[in-house]
Length: 376
Ligand code: PHE
Image (cartoon, rainbow, N blue to C red; front, side, top):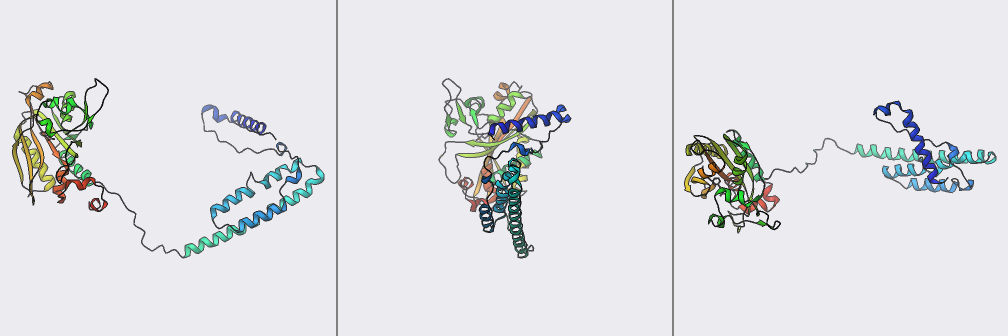
């Protein structure tokens, strides 16, 4: 039978089924029914090509050698399945002339019985083995522990920082790590010739000619501008994320660190609100007894500016910079600095994690040494 012709018949058979299925017209699921070939489809030109007795013996010998369920299944498909030689031969019987049909039919049915019996034996053998395996299985033994992953210590600390501010009504925003020079510097009152740029050298990205310069942000402060541009006070947000600097690494410096920006803008906010908020934060993360120190510091986008350190066995460790949002920035954002004031802070999450866990070298966090990471 030429293949194409057979396929054409199958296709039209399905079509008929579809047409006959009243549900399919209204989109009900259509169930494909298996196709039965009428035996007249199969013609046999040479009846001697039907399954021979040696083939049966050969197949049974092959089956005896199998020991895996998977292989036995494959054997069954090959020798007794719909597409097997045996089944094909049985289907072809109708095409034989009467005189031969009875003899060949008997032979084929015998072969089918032999193959079936051999398969049943093999399946019984496999089943016996399975029960034996089960008998030697002690279900009361403790299970094998699965290695569970854990959150990175920086992620844990970042979440603790977010949780501390969330209790004070701050909500979380996020901004891009690849940032416009404008948001990272200019809008924060750090013009190109400002000395603060030296301390914040970073990685610049090549853009198309004439495009605004792109860089990896050096701090999370650009989020202040991005948010104030589109919102009116009152504002109370935190913005956690990664920041980058072109920095020689040592025990307290990395070229990538995690910061969390804090920004509040409202009527009548003062440095007292900033201090109160940061004391409350420190109490959350380090407990009541840890000492916290405020000192004057300078950042172009705040006035006045402070730095905050936490006491540790190694002395004071600076964990954040902060201050009152510069009135010029508030005015640039369209706010009236006589009415609205604000405070901002930028926390170093790695430093906080080091203090919480007594870690002395910031580089440990990103070396991917499991002996270190498994401790958390
Ligand atoms: N962005 C500053 C830094 O990375 C920290 C800071 C944030 C200071 C907000 C003041 C106010 O060093």
